[in-house]
Image 1 (cartoon, one colour):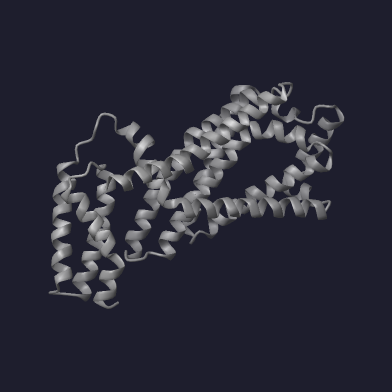
Image 2: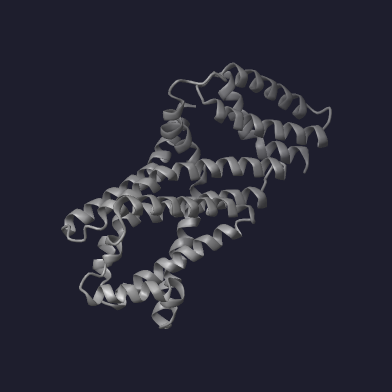
Length: 321
């Protein structure tokens, strides 16, 4: 790459970072460290391809100033945990909104494929959900209690079992991102084809509303959190495939750290979803308005924390610079 092209491609980043340092802006040590890694990566590139250049001297000075500030501000605040959940992570997550949108679109696509396959192939639902589950549900329908599956296990046992299983699925979505994102794609495919065929099964039995108003009490948060975990896996896959100006190893390490933070952020939501499934969903006698209220509140919380709030923080951060 020509030096002029290199400068043009990264100039805005350098000026932004220099502004942060010169204005002594209050940013977290982790955020500053991330910026520092990017600058040092550019410095390494310049040392290799543009030795004895003004670009190299500029980046060296910028990296030195950043190093001093990082270690000067290394002391952790007492409210570090709150800062992570309510400021650092949401602000960082804003940069992964494209991966989140992609994970959502993939989920919608495979849900539609699952529903279409169930509609066109009578044996498809059994191949996906299993004969045991389908037969049990048909018996429940015959006994006028189609959602009885949520009442058979003890509340605490169901809460713990569902929560642990969902976290396992989320971790798999993240970890399998190292297979260039293909593993994550497979996890999303298997889960959302199952969701589509599951919902069509109840639609075919004339129970779409009964199933939706029951299942989505916990499913709104659960399904959303799986999509977000898929976003984490896509971040990892992208870091390998598109390292940009970083070395591939540096990009991969950054992608893993970012993906891990995203997965960790879903754990409280999986706990909430597990609680709802274990203790609330089983009450199928609850009025429709209450079920709808729980679903809407769940959807609102997810959209606020992962979409609206990060955008607001980004706008505030941009205006302050």
